Image (cartoon, rainbow, N blue to C red; front, side, top):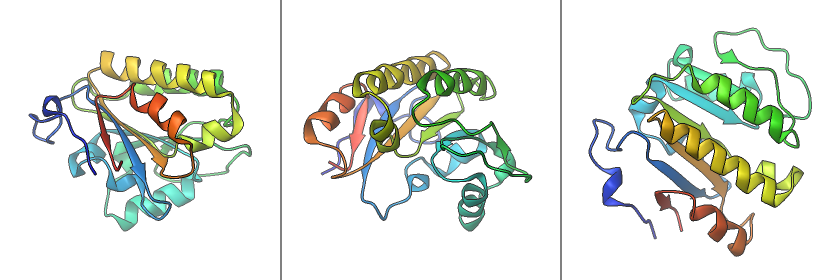
Amino acid sequence: MTSTSNATQGSDQGVVPGTQLLAALSSMESALSVPPAGAFDNLLLISPNSPKQVEADLRDREIDVSNVGLIPISGSAHTYEGPLWTTDAISPSDLTGLSMAFTRSLQHLTRGHGWVLFENLNVLLMYADEQQVYRLVDHFVQKTREREVSGAYTVVKGAIGEQTFARLQNRFDTVRGV
């Protein structure tokens, strides 16, 4: 069952700027399928995948990588010298470092037209305290709304408990995949 809010309809991308979406995906679905095609013209992606993998996934979808910024979430450093703009890798347990990188990176999105895509919140829940993850998600949602940028945050369906999912979904304007 898919749940959407009428408040999310209305812009050229089908989403009112500032709308925040939580999407529950199967383990085989790509987070890149969640935002509308126009989102990739001005996107900040937070992903547990390496920059090389993210670049390859974007190119497979014929997305211009020069319009995408990446915050890689990883316990190890990545050496990447490609066209994709990236920050240094942030450990999934370093929520303060992730928050700082997010706040700096968000400034590169065009107010009212940008998108944030957080691929797989499950990664943070595996490495950090659940309450701290909720606070970080609240921070991301608040900052994204303030910038009038839409956001899509994904979780792998079935990999987190129902109670955790319920607590997460209360932070969003709309939920898909439940």
